[in-house]
Length: 127
Image (cartoon, rainbow, N blue to C red; front, side, top):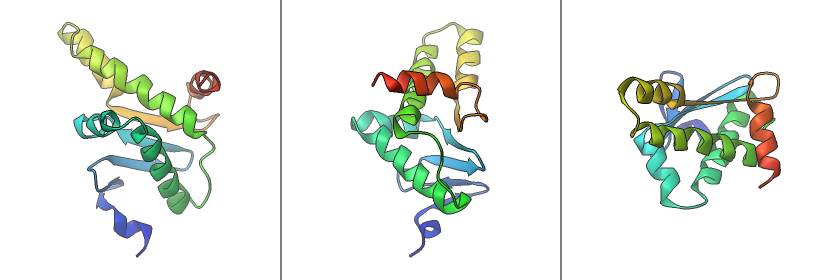
């Protein structure tokens, strides 16, 4: 069985067995930050790391190279999107909508392809 058989394809995105949708580009990964994803992350402490490792394997398969982002930096970036998204549920209408609009897709790019990579990498150094 190939890695492609492990995922249900939806256009350019893949959906894994938990229902988490993501896709890759030449220097980045992109994760749909929906209720399915957030529930999975919340279920077990190490699920963020597990999904990071799965997506990096898929990236390696599709892009034929390693993603040059540490696992810890990716986990930091995931939580940096999930937490504001949850806080936005309690913000007044338009403000909450703006926050959620910026957190609905988690775009994780390599250095030079993600303006925030430096920040996530620096935070990861402390963990």
